[in-house]
Length: 297
Image (tube, rainbow, N blue to C red; front, side):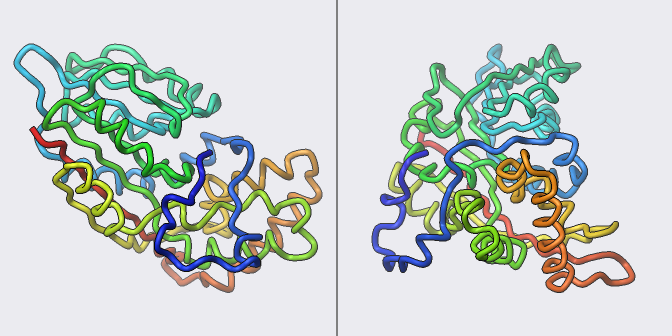
């Protein structure tokens, strides 16, 4: 992982206590595709909204669009690209063997004449070796501190008129995340979980992305949306976080099931208080940040 120093220029220095809590895992978390896909409808909706804002691609007659999906996960949203660009050649890129194993059955020719394949890539250090019409990323860049520093290389890999488009969570100040950071920093867990906390500054604000991308010569459309997700079932917010935010904790405690269950019990109790159920389910507001950057022609 790269340093966040460049992204925090001009911001107040954090206190030592804040520094003690804003860690990124030294190793990648273990992923569980089945758990991630339990909420696939809610997770796919922002990607559909992102795709609706992407302008026409610079594909030429006889040359299908070339698209990279950076951080493709299990491929469930990667296939949505073919709804818009039926004959595209799409490559899903991810570092998780578990996610790519889940995605692999989707690979091959598509009914619209396109093609889908997958490759193992450390997205933050990805150096494109070909030219693309679209580089897209869905809920992945928040796992890559310093990802904005990679924008120049990604834009260099786009054809003139090509687009870099992404969405990522902007909810690191929500109770689901602040309670998790506080619990990891509690005396009973600090020694084991201090490195299992993601840096809440890993996602920039929409205006920060506008500043970064316009300085690189792009036309930028950036916005934010808070989805009022209604979750159902027992401890639904805990179930949601088991697919994403909790992965580093579950990885760190994988060799100690008793400790894992104890942590989950403590976290679940905090979430029940923060997100009380209603007769229709549990409301879980989720803020997302979007950016669509079109390279000059």
